[in-house]
Image 1: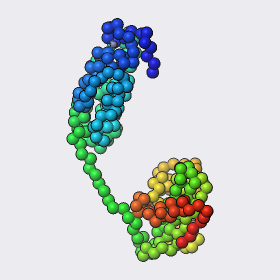
Image 2: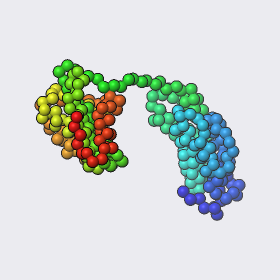
Image 3: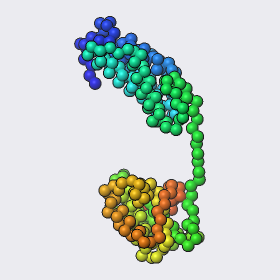
Length: 288
Ligand SMILES: [Zn+2]
């Protein structure tokens, strides 16, 4: 956005030049809008320069909950001032109250989208600020660990890494029985690829090994949510893994194989092996 120095401000009729600082900060209308929103948010400080005012909002110490909302105020305010300047320049009027209401409405909509779980959200800026000040998020936690497969089943954990994403990749899988005994584990380096590609290659290698060795029924556990969603048909198949996914789906027909998702904490052995081999230059395949 470029505001030329030679043009007079069309909003305030004070014969002031339309500089960036005047139009967006010192012009009485702009100043009053900034002030109304700043006071309600408890933001204090001189408003001297365009960049300094934005920093005032962006560097305010307001805690993580309100930060996204506070950071967005300058964007809506500047946009509204610029819009009004163009409306007035074209011979139409726009009151300060309308400006205030529009910014207020943008902030309300932003809050609704950013904090969808907040019920009965008020629609005025001071009340929104107050609600977020008093809001305490409910924190839930649960312990994640590897669990034994049900009786008579095998469980295979897989993981894929990519150092650089894309970068040199590695895959690993480990099969355990119902008692948690390790039956087989393998980790290998693969060509330069992304994490998702490495994850799928690990799953494919695992399924191939288990089918060839009759380790069925099988639970394949991965910490890649994308792989799980793709195999469930919920997410679209990225082209980079489509060939491997087709192969896995073909192999899964008519065999008792289930794919489940776990968090990294529940996948620690495969995660360790994949990372271990990635740092082990010179050896391409490790079997345990
Ligand atoms: Zn002005």
